[in-house]
Image (cartoon, rainbow, N blue to C red; front, side):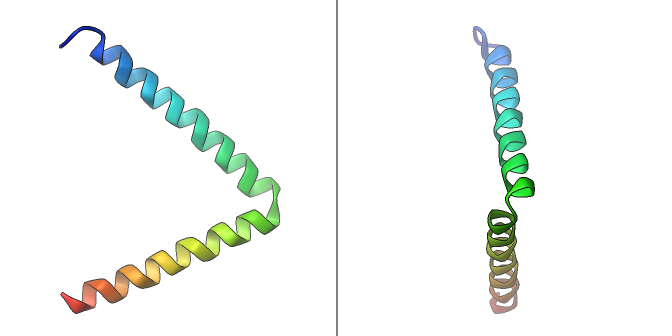
Length: 55
């Protein structure tokens, strides 16, 4: 491995975990934001299904 690449990867994983934890806490503790997030995810799922049928 080059230099501290392994440590950089581990740090990125930990940083990602912290960001996801903060996002999860916000979405679960703020119903309006959680509902909006669910709507966005639903729209992505619907759009992806339409794209798959076109191919």
